[in-house]
Length: 150
Image 1 (spheres, rainbow, N blue to C red):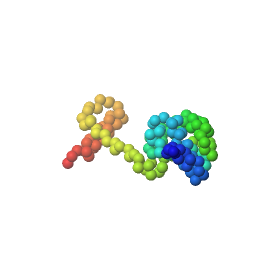
Image 2: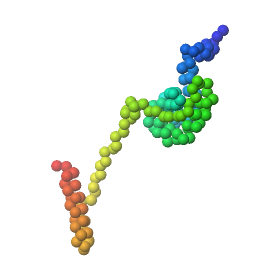
Image 3: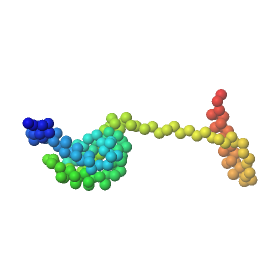
Image 4: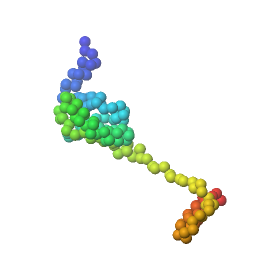
């Protein structure tokens, strides 16, 4: 009696299912990646002789790109041992544009509330420094006049 595993392995031997066989072999490469990347990884695909790691989150993509020099040789060595027709020569990360656009960050609105009121004494005797400090005082008073509730 044939079990599901036996039937599945026979199906993979057929030429119609070579792409599925390659895909299953490439999924084994996920084991060579750390959890931080593995969680954000959508799939691993071969395109020409490039091994493309398709990510579903920008943080995993950035983590991979930052450590690419460490992960690339490991993945290439592991891929050489797999039973796939074309051996990869390069590893590259890929983040789909629609995912990248959905994670667009807008910088926070910067707001500074000036605490000084401009009621300080001007101790300078030098007319140049005295004028600079008076200019600062007028700027502070203008700022408070424009931000006070009316």
